[in-house]
Image (cartoon, rainbow, N blue to C red; front, top):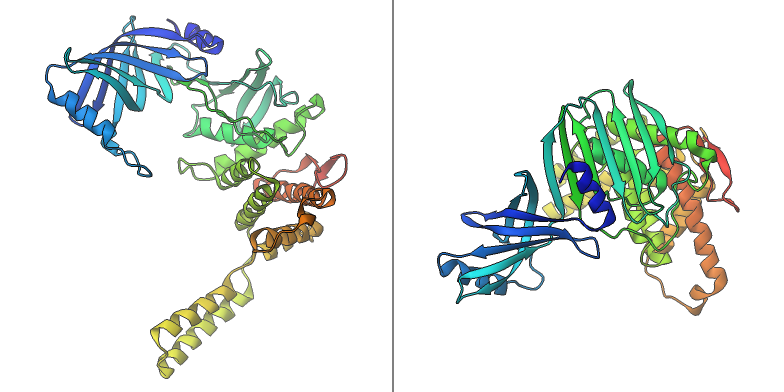
Length: 437
């Protein structure tokens, strides 16, 4: 089965391939045998392998390990297997780390091993020397991509051209193709997905990743990962209309350039992590949503850079003088720690102060900061609930707060990534388009 045939089968949901050889290794334990890989109705990838045992003890050990699991405990590392498979064309597939479950027959000294690999990966050489990354996203029919569909969007990253095309394949599947003039930098796939998540306001997990770099083509197939949110997305600029296509490309470019300038630590960037927190918190309740977005804003303020203050030098002198005084007075160790902690709080810059520093330049709106302060304090401090909290007007008040804090969240990120241009103002009735700053 060729790469293109594999992609089409996986898109249809009927991917299935017999494997003459599947090998699973965990430490000094090794199992192998024929089997198969297939997609089930949910979109999960299922592995099935038939294994014969030459000795009784390995079967007994497998049964004992499966019975020794403890509620609330992490799965022991030696329970994971590194799995590979060889297809009829002798092509090698990497199945990564898997947890197996089994059906063992002691009389026949055989068993059936099953697993649900998260990802299948296969590589082959190609004559294509360009850098091309194709991402396929499934179950996108309830999401707004209209403003991005088409292309190629010309994006410059460090003076190098990146061309990104968005294609609606079936109404439920979106294909994104990125072409780069140079080899992709480390972590490019992750960073492109981060930028797209920011632009569309949704969590995105590609079902298929098809990458060509340095004459090597790598195909990755991932099992179903439900990430469809029950609540509407709040993209920084409306994606449900083609009127903003050019501006959405600029927004994508700003975020990608910000990520390119930051050191790659092989993890998501701070803005992406806080945006993920907001998306996940919105799944529970409006109160959880408010807490999540308030915490995200507070975390993002740490990315707002401030000019050194003259107060810092004065505080350093005060710390030294206090240390000398505590030595002279023989202050106990416990009280010394409390005093040092109190002085340390004086040098800490409050999130509100960082945000207020951007108000004079028009980067942030002071009323949004006041709304955030009130919502945060109300959400995180213990208070007694009353019947008034579930009345219609009370709900509307919290929804209004949520919308204004979304505006604050987005404008902080705009400042951090260096974006200027159109955005959707969720703090005003009708969600009009505005220009930032």
